[in-house]
Length: 352
Image 1 (tube, rainbow, N blue to C red):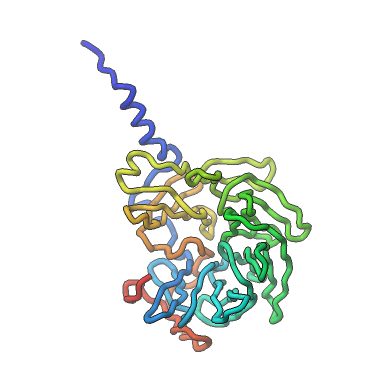
Image 2 (tube, rainbow, N blue to C red):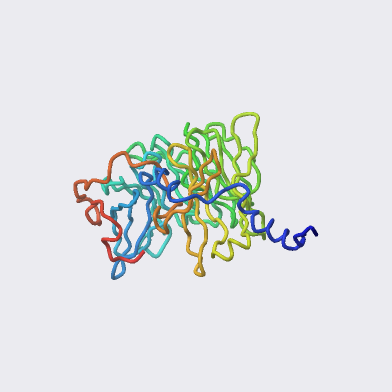
């Protein structure tokens, strides 16, 4: 009987179609149910009529509005590692510099403070694990940008570090930039290098070229995306911070024929650590409108689980876990904001 041969072209197509799945496997709804994302805390903004914007904290299927601004904008959000505090940049209603105020607020809508003013902020705002210090990349009146670290533990805010990073489209700091010891920080420089800096000695170490570095909760790993100039988003990797240093690819960021057929694009943004360090949450562009959809990657197995669009709020702000179930807290009376009661997102008609 004559042996049937599969044409080489078909084999090549099959290899390309499967290439994006060599490191990860899409999981079923059963896998989705065992991911503890219902307790992960994120924050995002939402427009409210007629001209306002509100800051919304989300935990699982529940959310609460903690601050409302009638005119202006809110952005550059970071949730603390314990999920109890939120930092954000608020635009100021003045014509001269500075144009933004960095503010902090408790996740129940209380204790609003303005802690720093500047003309621009790039990336997100990062909390140390003890909630004493904030880090962000920003500029004052000049065109040069600095890595700025401030101590907000006392009534008088103190600038701890102001280190120049230059100016360029690559510079970025994520909401999970701090090591758990609060002494080391990781960020992307203006020329696209991933740098760690010891905030005590000011010593810096280059990890490679890429974008959006995040530090694991136990301090042993840093994750980032290996971007190169002029190329599509790169693969996601981790690098060990204990000797010997080891680089490991955890997600091949390619689009196969099967992905294109399903409307799946590249993964974008930072890979953010779950509070227990078992998972990484990241976004993937999907559909004709390229809407970011959240995915969760289990670090130990490489299992990749898609979650419903919008189920994790703004992933870039991911902090810690909710310490309590989303029971309605006492309404907040301080500042210009609505009562900070937990509600299901479907119960509001405001557009995100």
